[in-house]
Image (cartoon, rainbow, N blue to C red; front, side, top):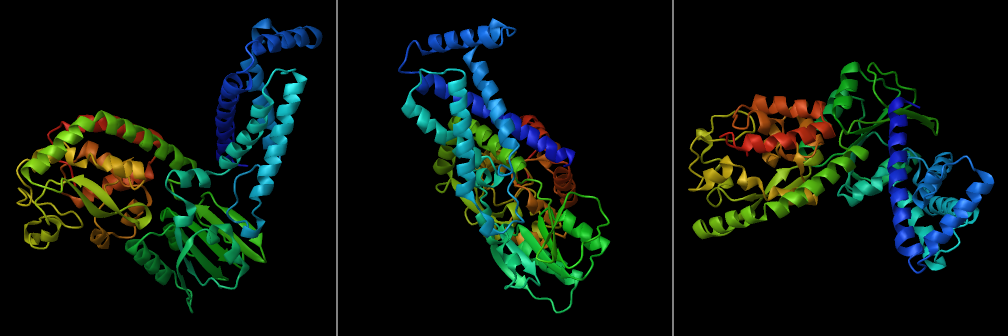
Length: 477
């Protein structure tokens, strides 16, 4: 087991230790002994008596019920982690191997047996039996939820069932189609290549990437080998990749992957989606918490801007624009309207005034902006409704700015990587060169963000954003 996997196990263990200890202590105080005022005193006396008889070397300062509960949870988790059924979900397992009820039953039996043993062994004799029975179900449900990041990601807005995939030379009758990585996702297209061609596969992936959402690429190599260039292309896609081959693949690059031999076939899977699983969960949790706080704090400003727009320019004050989000998914982005109505349709009319190359459409002294709109843009007040997009999961607080769907035609295969992270309200560009009209500058900061993304980087950008807003620079889009 690699050090990264060990680190994940340790972090998950610590998280569960804190969560289960807190819940059990809270449940004990508010439900299990609520009807018995003298329960704590009786249990402490029992613990003191046992301590005198069996472990007199332990200090009386440690005779606290909370400590006993935390120690019980720790021992239970050690036992749980030593079992075979409480492991991460293997996406290369077959769907008919799903045993959710069996897994819940195993966890329930282990938890209830451990809990009852603890209660009897340490003589926690004054407890509500009804609430105790209910608690034997609560913890197993929580443990099943946290067994895999898939369910939590789904709750936070990214369910695996909404993801899509493209496959190349995948036989529709093959048992491989029953893998959970395939069955839970929607097929866009299965391309049958008579002659294996890396160029055709690359072109098709890029085309689908620009046309809509794409999360997983499946390639049946057969007995073909892949070139170093194509290998690097797949790695840099920042997507989930499943390679099916008759022989084990020899890779030129060193990267995290998993290879399994199933049905006389080698399955090689790697996931370079940098905002997936636990990373996505942490990022979304921060997004939801901070956005909710900002919406409450900034509500007076939102109302003032809304009233200003409808009183000077009429409705709508808030507009919706189709923008391209994570993995090419198109969503409705909210903005306070700073331009005259139907301004986006006038892009072609003012095309000659646009001095920028690539997807950036900016006009100096843009005639489409109404009086007062420039002020809203200058201090990014027009972007505030996008906090709702963040709550909904279409956007993040930090990420590359979402562009229009027609702008993706300007993306090369390297810049397509910007679609593999959540678009954001702010980012490296906004805290460095917000008023730039140079597409290469956008490209530089977007790729830098993707290559170096971390929760720490997001927090750093969030803290720097307020200072950049008041630096007399106009926001990008």
